[in-house]
Image 1 (cartoon, rainbow, N blue to C red):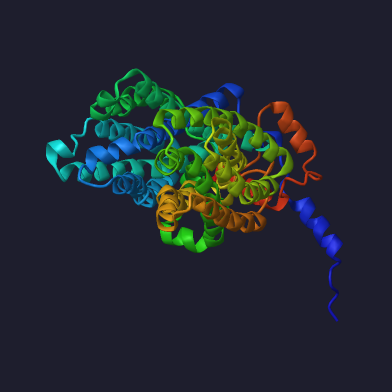
Image 2 (image 1 turned 180 degrees about the vertical axis):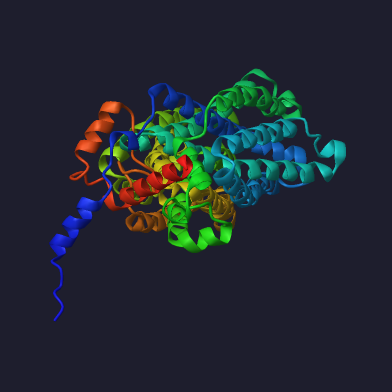
Length: 506
């Protein structure tokens, strides 16, 4: 007869043999470094959405300039179709740039994406129209939008990875929300810029040459953004992973991981990828409805004056930008899953009333209809920026984010304006877009329930991150009772780090 060891004794033995967390193991990010990192990431994201916002608010003019022989309906679908074409290149950019970001570094790839994005936007501003070069005009426009799509495929994935790897665990959603606050602010700046031009320039000049000014302004804006981005070092988590790859033995490599190729990444994390794709589809369908589709919907379907429609959207985007950090604070306190579920439910319940208010036609009803649509966007965005990177370990985080985010926006978000306008055209019902938003949020509600909670916990494959040395001491003192620490996982990482140091010393 074999005596079976008491499970309690085994647990105690394992606990005694476990390498304990020490203060020097905890990553402390100084406030000044954190602010610089967030600013460097946020300015690029703002720049991306300035570019997207400008295109959205001159989409009707672009349709006339680059498809001169088409009907008004055909021109609207063309301009929205060209916008959707951008997202065809995003998965390619996300895959290529994500793999590079996990190998070469987040900061270097983000510098490249910003340069490419600003250059493509500027070139759209100087591109001759149909009357000058015929069919080459729409063809070259599509090429430049594909360039934008490739670069933006690595932008959000890299920026969110960058910020979440720098941010303290307890406030990750708050700091990550700055990215999406910048997105809305960038769209608002683009809308305001176009609206001011429309108010101060004649309609003839605006339709002939004035629409190009916001695109050409992207070049100096991009230069300023690049200045901030180049001042930021790569994240501590990425530097630690790189150091591990340089020095670790085979056993340590298994613990800390290594960057995976595309196929290996999909095989290893297909559940996380699928969960993220569904959540991004739900969030961005609503987001793109507010930021990108509304100018066309208000002008073409509801026959608003273009200037009036744009000016009504601007304050909504500003309010949305201010609310996103509040949503991040909510997420850090209540948890990612709960706030994402609230976001999905608010989109399901509020979409039809919001569109009914838009269809009412008065200024007050339009404004409140837009606010109702923007509410779930604020709840979604801060949570996604913090939740999606936490689905993947450090060594495959940029690559995983690049696939998740960009496949979803290509299939659902980037095509959302085109799909919603097509639904209106096919059914003749201005209310039709509301049901598309509701459908995607039902799927998002299911995905949020499946997702693993990541609020206040260390990023997978990384040591805990805090804002002060005192917080690090408190964390170490309470490690045995802290529900947000997985001590078994941390023990493996600590052991790998110790082996790495010994190997490096030898």
